[in-house]
Amino acid sequence: MHRHLPLRARLALLTALAVALAVAAAAVTCWVLTRNQLREQMDRTLATTGTPFLNPRGGPSSTIADICGRPAPPFQRGLLTYQVIRADGWSCTQLGTSTDPVAPVPVSDDDKAVAAGGKEVTFHDATAKDGRHVRVMTQRVSRDTAVSVSRPLGEIESSLDSLAMWLVVVSAIGIVGAATLGLLVARAALRPVDRLTEAAEHVARTEDLDTVIPIAGKDEIARLGRSFNAMTASLKASRLRQQRLIADAGHELRTPLTSLRTNTDLLLRSEQTGRPIPTADKERLLHNVKAQLVELSDLVGDLLLLARPEQVPNAPPTSTAALHTAIERAVGRARLRAPDARIEVDISPWFVRGEPASLERAVVNLLDNALKFGGAEGEASVEVRLEDGELTVRDHGPGIAEADVPYVFERFWRAPAARGLPGSGLGLAIVARTTAEAGGTVALEPAEDGPGTIARLRLPGTSS
Image (cartoon, rainbow, N blue to C red):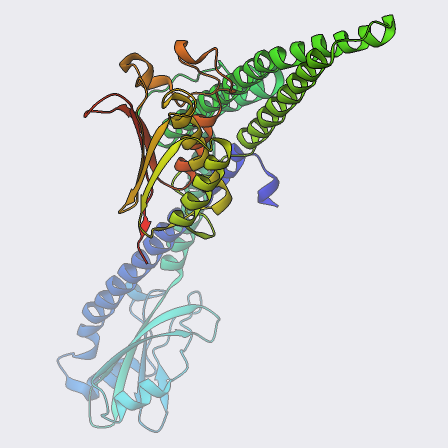
């Protein structure tokens, strides 16, 4: 039932419950301590008040004679009751007056034990024959005789009843006050949560990711607010990347689509007007169409690869891949694409956590980039090394400018010198993403021992 209550009501309810338990424990403890204190005080009163009657000048026999069959003294009527008790259970009670009778108290086993000499004195509660609750002290006075003194507990019970009533009233006031204070405290404490809730509802309603919650302090609410701000900032960055990807993809698709449309229009117009295009020109147009289609296919494939959900950074993939095998396959594909290029390979076994197909695609992209910028067609020279998990791909081209190094792994980015060359600008972005998913690093840097560029890709793994 309490799970359906608002959080404020639950906090107030829990506060009231905690205070109720504390107040109840304190009230019960106070009542018990007071009761014990009053009883101890009454026991001391019985011991001191009963002593003169238990030990008169005439000795024990006179004591018994003073009690049995004699009226109670005026100052003790209604307060004390004296009884003579023998070990066999016989007893006699000091008489009262007709207006204030003193009711006898039943003899208990403890009283008999005192009379028989098993104990010297005992204190216990009892109920007189008139129904009043009394406190009894029994003390041995001779070999088989004891005298008991009893006093009504009415005054103690009345005081305890009054105390219990006041404790209940004060406890109820305290619980109600605690519940009210708990509700006020809950409202004040949850005010930041209300602001966070309003901000989340505003974002859900308007999709405004610029919403920022003011943060103050270092408590849990502030931590929650910082997490919310970080989440909206991440969503905003993701949306901007998505919009940029769509815009860049549209820009990259426009060129091959325009070329395809132009070539197709030429072919259709030639057929419609009855003026055939020369065979050589027609063949050139068809090869151009095929090249544009291949470029479109590669671009769509790269976009689909980049559009898939990213894995958690540094999260270990579920499969193990042989990086050296992926490199060998990538080199074979690169040689088919550039049969006249010179590719030197020196690799050693290295096993990593990753997808073999993704790793092969990343190495192919590095090799394509190196062959594209490694020299004139048919003269490109690329060196591939793999040692202790570090793959280096070195070309001997003009090299990369220092100003271009921070941007080479961005999507659709191209250096000014490469904008006239074929490609979508997504190859190195795919390399960076694949490397990050495998928990590695990749970087491009100018070669130090001559012209060219070195790509360094390092993946954690083992040689066996």
